[in-house]
Length: 571
Ligand SMILES: O=C(O)CCC(=O)C(=O)O
Ligand SMILES: [Fe+2]
Image (cartoon, rainbow, N blue to C red; front, side, top):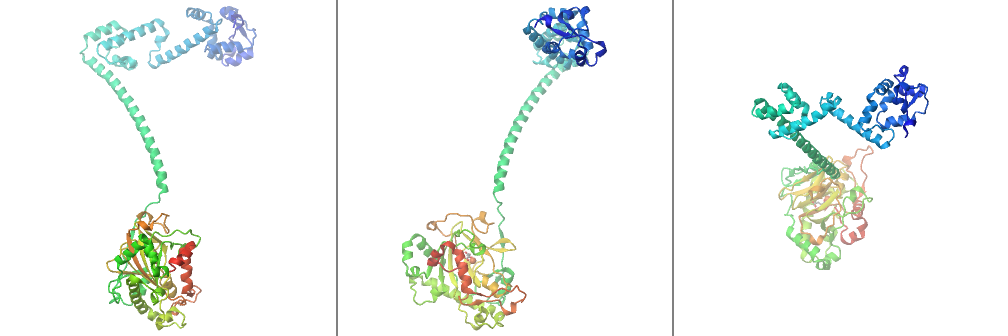
């Protein structure tokens, strides 16, 4: 850009306040040459303002264009050009690179100014000699301090140092290196200096500590962040894991039916849904022979050929099942069929009654069933007889019980063997009552929406109310919902997660021996006359065979063909 072409706005006293506006409005411009000679300013000079603006902006001096007064002051200052020239920027308007250089210098100057202002030695900037003197003094001071054993960076906090010297009345020393050197050399042990040195070390020390602390804080922050992320991940996972519910136990009453508790069975079942029967409730000892059943289980699972070759197995008088899903009897057929994790043997009453069956060496099982059933029938009929006395329809269970006609033809014996994580999903039994013996805990009953684990008092049998008792009593005694689950983490579910169960590896963690006492297929299970309410809420009469078949179909579901081959009996 040629100096001749370059324009700067002329100052206009009447428009000092809004300077930029004033150049545009006044159109009063002067060339660089005219600017050089302040006496030749012409108020009527007119040029577009963009060049001027550019040049001032390039020089970092655009603030002058906002302040006419200041501009005039600068322009009228005789030294301006001299100064530029002295600084080697005389030709600044002719060479763009010079402009750039000047701009950098000005930037640097601005920063130096700020620094000096910060350290409260602003006056120095006015006076180059002072500045140079100060820089030299600082260097010398630095050296002197270091020679006298002061920490490096002692002068870094110059304003604090100055204040400390001022307080000690020694401020002059900072402006006179020779005096300072002399002073330091002769006063190394002086108390004030020891204090000063200590203070300076402390500043450095504290600064180091602060630096370390900052690093530490940054590190801990990072660790915290990492931990927070891990925690969040854990929380995500833990939210997807259902909490393991606390296992809760219930102590059921133990009835002594050979003595004081006779006649209390129905009432106890009404209250508890299930009760224990103390040893001695039976005519003969009807406790199962666990060893015999275990041996049979080993045969069925490990010597399959031998087991299947048995005549009673082939004729389905002895059934072996591992495909029952009892939860389907509660939830319905919409539930996918997922067998409970256990195996069970079943013997139906009809098989036991038949004189034609060849039980081979399994007569003990049949005898066990017969004795158990006889004992249970005696107890049940005795306990129910009074209640059933009023009923008149000869097909009904009540009349059959009173008359002694009920032969409990759909009763069956079931012997179950469970693996470690064995299950039997929630259900009610279909018959009148169920009598159970077991080798260990695992059975739970549902009371007030809570699953409660039962212990098995030594030698006691467990008696549970079934669907038919609920119907017979018109709901007065409710069938008890129960299930078996042997693994803790599954204690909250109604039906259990699918888990492959290979019965060939079954050791038998728990055995249960169950007699389902159920009426004959043609018996009509109808609410007792004495229990009717006649308010539309009475339960309907049901032929037991129909009820039983419907439930068995649900429990075996799609496997019904298989079920009918192996185990058409049910709870
Ligand atoms: O194994 C048990 O203790 C109970 C089994 C059961 O409730 C059933 O098979 O109906
Ligand atoms: Fe059951």
